[in-house]
Structures are given as C-alpha cells and as structure tokens.
Image 1 (cartoon, rainbow, N blue to C red):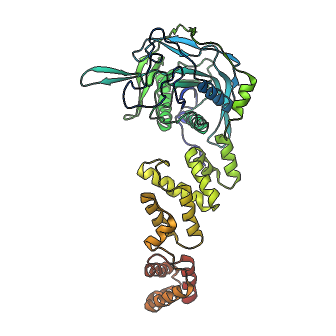
Image 2: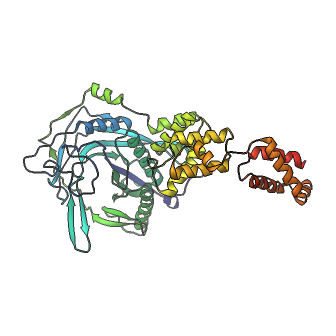
Image 3: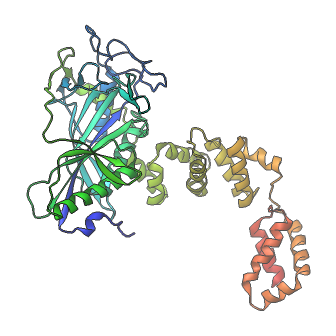
Length: 485
C-alpha cells in the first residue's frame, strides 16, 4: 500500500512539530464537585446548583468516580500515577465561568509521563508521549443571537468533569495527528469513561503546530488550532496550517503566535485571537479541597477493572482469522466490534465479517442511524447467515430478508416463509426446469457449444427467472453444464 501524500512532501527541507491537548468529558452520573446530574439537557440552566454556579459560601466536594476514571485512563495510556496530588485555581474571566476561576490541576497532575502507540503509514509503530493528564471542571456555554444582538449563558455544562490529556510535541504530520486522536478516542470509549461524541464536545481539543527548517535547532512559533470536532477536519486543518506557515516563512514573513479556527466551508484556518504572550492565570492551591492521596491498593483495584483495550482486541481478532484491514475497522468502533463478536459467537461463519462490514455498516451509513437503533440484532444476523449457509435461501433472498428485517424487525426464518423465499434446492425440480430452458433455446445452445462460454450466464439468468430467484445457484450451474455438454 502506497503512503498517502502529505503537504510536507512538497517541502522536503521543512518539518512540523505538533502537540495535542484533548479534553475528555467523563460519563459520571453527577458533576465533578456537586451532585447535579451530569447529562445533556435541552432546557437551559436545568442541572445547576449553588456549587457549580459558584455561589458565595458553597464548597466543592470531589466526585470519587472522577478520580477512579482518571487513574483508569492513566493506566491505559501507560502513565505514572501521582501518589500525592492536588487541585488549583486557574483564574480568568469569561461570562460562562461563574467563579471567575476554574478548579483544575497545576503542578501536581494525577497522571504523568505516559505514551500511546500509533501505527504509521508504512505499517511501523511510533510512540506518542503523554506529558500529563489532569482533572478539571468544564465551563458553561454562551449562546449568541445575531438578530437581537443578545447573549445568553447556559450553566448546565458548568462543573462537568473533564480529563485534559496533553502530549509532548512528538507528532510530525497530519497522518500521525489523526492516528493518535483515533487511538486515544478508542481507548476512552473502550474504558467506557466517555461517550466520545465529538459533535457534542465530549472529546475535543486543541492542536499546537509549528514549522521549522530541518537544520534549525530552535522550534518555530506555535499556532493553536481550536475547537475542531472531527478527525477529518483536524487532519485537513493540520495540513492547511503546515503549508500556510511554510509559505509564510518562505515569503519572508513571520508566523504569529495566535489561536485559529477551521473554516469547514472554505477549508482554511482563520484567526480567532492573538496570543502574543502566555496568559498569567495566577494558579494557586485550591483551599477548599484536600490533598489527594493515592495508595498502591487503590491503583491495583483500578487495574483489576481494566477491560480489553483496542490494541489487544486488534491482535486477538487477527489471530482468530480476520485480516488487519477488517480488524482495524472493527476496533475503531467498539459497538461494531461487539456486534461482530456476538454474531460470530452464535454463527462462527467466515461470512459474518462480510455481512457486518458490507451490509450492516452500509445500512447504518445510508440511513444515518446507530447500532443502538438498528433492528437486526446479532442473533438475527446469525440466524440469517445460518439460513444462507444451509441453503435454505440464496444470496438474493438473503439480501431481501436483510432489508425487510432492518426495516420492520422480525425473525429471518419467519420472514423466509412470510415472503415465500425458500430456495428451490430439489435436483429433480430444478432439472426439469433446466431441460425446459435448453429445449426452448436452440440458438443459444448452439452458440455455447461453438465456444462462446459467456452465454452461459444467459442460461443461469433464465433458470433464476423461472425459479423467481429462489433456485440454488450451484445446483443450477451443475445441471446446466450437464445438459449443455
């Protein structure tokens, strides 16, 4: 497989340095420092209290599940767990930050010095180092109404528990950035600590990019790409930004330190705000929360909860006979992987993977639904494949039954009878039909016997037509060869 072209191939004397900060929204039942429901609500300011809105005299209490999840993610990304850590106040003013500071972690994050392994284009592996993982609370959400020139603040998201995962600048191009993000996204989904829904902001982040001549020792000026909510957009934005910076330098200009957004319509980055110098957030120790002491027993308990991770699942599926390509598609979506494995456990046919990747995925994409909404359960798909394997139905009938089951549900076996799709498999019955076709088609028989073998398809089509698509194709072909010889 050839390596996909990247913009850096057109500028061989340059290299890019990329670091990524990802915010992972945790799926705890309540928020990080209060008992408000941690859920998306269409009603503004429905899930709030005096703590998450920063009312005077209110005191935060750490949600222990957040800490457990942080340790779990740290262990899954090969981090060291900090035995003694704390929270800090990060001060800045923004309308949706009611306390005017964010409770986060500063110099003592819960996890440090980890790594994630990604696969490169040539099949080799690369280690992307993780600098730190820390816990913090999310801010609220501002809504701006252009027509009335009004702004509204919804505090529902305020206090939602987050993990911020920060890499070292180990990423060299858009391909590696996308590969890292997909791998990290899969990890948090497999751990069941995050929905991974990028459109809802559950997995979001900032990408920091700089370019420099390969011979230069100092890094170039860093530009931050913010709030890009899809893997493709991130990849496209990184490619664009690398080329923008290189062309700027080549033209004698200077890259400015700034935050930029990705314009999905015009496919280019645009300035959001300048960052001439680092902000002074005036971090200091959070006095309302105690030190966090993590014991070896605590870490060991979390280790026992570790599920199978994406890399482990990939290796296991390949060992069981899937191709790396097939396993890679499944592993990328844990719901799809589980669907396949549940089906395969009932019906261990090699056809299962084809039906899942071709028909199931195709139907979900075409109808824009999730597996959760899909009406064909693993048991139903296994039943359908069994009917096909034992020649009760043929491929054409199987496709018809699949669509019928996907639209209205129901047992495939029952649908076979309801739709009258039982395969005609009796040799005597089919032989009578074949003889009739041969007698009625003397010109085509003569052509076939003269060496025009392509006309064999005509006879197969005639047989399938007379059996209304229910004839056993293999028996039909065998009988045709017998009577045309």
